[in-house]
Length: 179
Image (cartoon, rainbow, N blue to C red; front, side, top):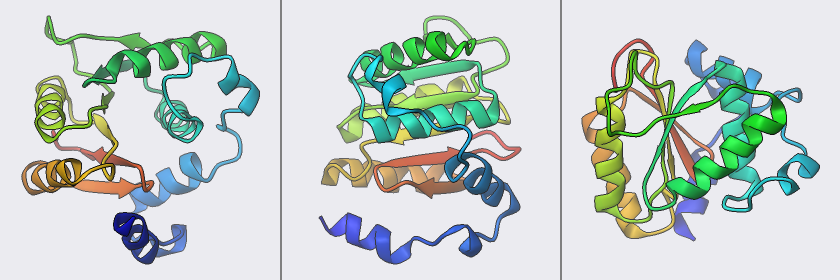
């Protein structure tokens, strides 16, 4: 896939990261050995999401000590079920919210898990409504179709202050500003 090749050509290790905020995340969450999800832990979870995606979210949740999460999109149930079980198994207190009522103080991590441009943009807007100054948004499936590439381009033009890609998933950080 062309987007995978582009990712590999543009990506760098932590030494190529110039933002102290992102360097901290790369070193202490993504590359850290201590917040890893073991294959055994993963096999005990509902199999709605891949090991790589679940491991990345697990590391980000542990790094940010996030407790308030909101998953939206056509795959939100699978994401929520997987993370809920992971939280129980790891003794993490995770609270999952819905958009039916305002979320006091906003969410800490929002997860967009959709495969269409319209669905992803709608889910992202809902996460923005429930964000605070420290909200991080993870967007799944960003390179799975041209529609999702277009969704990512639309999101980048409007609200993103800082983004990092793990090839299949994009993480957006507000870093002191609302998304």
